[in-house]
Image (cartoon, rainbow over all chains, first blue to last red; front, side, top):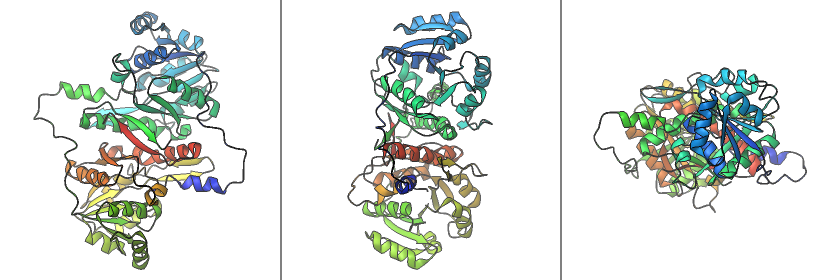
Length: 242
Length: 242
């Protein structure tokens, strides 16, 4: 057991600094184009739907453009579909919602198109057996750190790991009762992702550390799957006292 | 991104079973004696205070009996103090709230006393540097799995990882706004720990998987420390839709 407060006391001993910026003073992201790689899967589709419904311009990407176009038509709300490369090229922010086993290959093949973009990794490396889900540990530490290693010319953040595709896609559900943990190295990038999450009804984007602490956030999905089984729920997470 | 719902659909395809037990039908634990190893540290003391205030019989343990007795007097609410061995011997449930660097040694030295007991590990293996906290990966997978390996004759669960010692110890705070993720192999043991967590005002104990998924729960404290720094908060976690 380690006190979660311990870093606070260390910070209190640091020399006086300029007043801290309000952590809820987030940028206006309404003009950004958001691409979703893996946008034809349940999570990617659900996220595209929620962002587009909130007024964001969204492009869903897939390996095959026609599948992406079909998914986009199904989602509505002005969503467009394109192949992954065009999706990356035309977007300011690119959400990576592909299956873990295609993660490295997909990103490597799009290194050029993703150059200069804000890449938001939401991939959860998990294995499954009879006892349920368990965490896989990528060589780089986490899916997000793998993305950062493969995309040296992109800005990489991690977020949107703990969402239920069922809830995201259900048009009867107006609000998703969950916070989104956002991780990254650059505060400006993290704040863009927080602001995007905050556009979805019910959600808040909460800064939750650097990419070196992404593994536990990604693999916590294994625990939420256990929660969902036991309680027949679509569990999310709220950070309290924030 | 992996759907947290995926296990649900697998479960739905399974053959029909007897009606599932209500996951909130938890045992009466009011008669159990709870020992807290590391009960003179801020987290251990805070947890002892909250449990004793809720009516639980609590013994705080320390290497030196006199330090434990002094801590117990400070806590009040009928808490007793003893050395770690006596604490373990006299308790039904033993919470392990020692620092990570003393974890293995403490448990090894108490193997006999902890035999047959329900041991609840709440240790978070973390490292700290200038960038803040980061996860340490124990050879056994997690602190809880290390405890299970070192204590073959005990029943090991994991819980109480995400609590703020400041909030726990503050007598002005009546309720702690957080859920407690409880992990373990045996449902009956997990339910005892859930019930104990549920005795503390504001808390619920929520089943969150097997011990092989304890590492991410333990190391998520690194992320909560980042949250606390950014938001000047004492963050906790709520599981939504449960």
